[in-house]
Length: 438
Image (cartoon, rainbow, N blue to C red; front, side):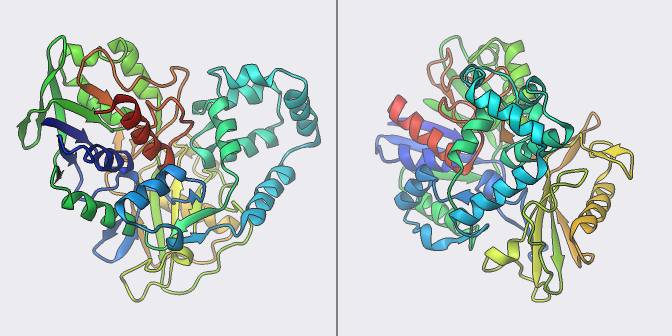
């Protein structure tokens, strides 16, 4: 019997536990620090009434690995989806019009030259960012604003997004974008599936604090409920959470994947967070029809009309409309406040966000506002509990390092990934399972 501990019950951890438990010789403990599984995809209900999430979430009908996982756990996903931007043609048309209407004529000439004559191939193999690419092509200020918005919609700001990942994600994106009618349903089915597996134990509200190891392998882990032993340890935490664990661990763990000082730099530069908040209205509110209407404000706020696509957007019968919003660029500058997002407290952020949205299409103030739990300000900068991976110039790390029984699995270590999506998280688990055959 091989005792395996998987850390993190987000999509990757759920997929790993489902796949590895097919081997009856594996005994799996899946630990999750929160009271609900799902990671970035979990839904919380404030006061047991109000829908709360860390950011608006859409997926693509092209998420083959995720739909394979759904099939495995017994969830028929396809009937549970609603188109967000209409059909394929509508989606491409809206995206195309947004780009065409915001670029200047000279930008078209420069980009045409770049993609047809210049050395685009060298850029797709480089570790340069979207911001580097925009400077190289001398794109206009309007063009830079346009690609900044597109970068944020894809993942994060141009300074933190590799050009090759941006292009790859755009190439992979065409298809219908959809949202779950019930965003909790697949997670509830996944939890039931895992609990029925005799060789899987799911432990919630258990947090990995540190790892003990000798020069060859992990010997034990310390959690908030005490020490646990295992034959294999698989961590699915994103870079910022991984760093907190590694900082308190044995020297051999700290230098497991790459040299410790480089590892710390990699962790600090390889993720992005978001400030998520939801607007709850006691009446039906018309959502502006222009695509990305909210993204063109100072803070590039992303808004999704959640109540249009979900069956039960609120447990408060008075609430008729729910909009889910998020801010990704914490250094975005408000001309009115003369402050960045990081300069503001939460009350200022929400007040300014409402003002910006009213400039573009919001017609009235919400009845209730909820904000993502767990936001913290550290050294003058906001940190969110749920983050996404974005490859820096240091790229990705290997799943397995020097120690025989320690692995990190996720988009950050999946060699075929571009940006963090639901599908890339699940795909990394399938890749690990096929490569390491535990």
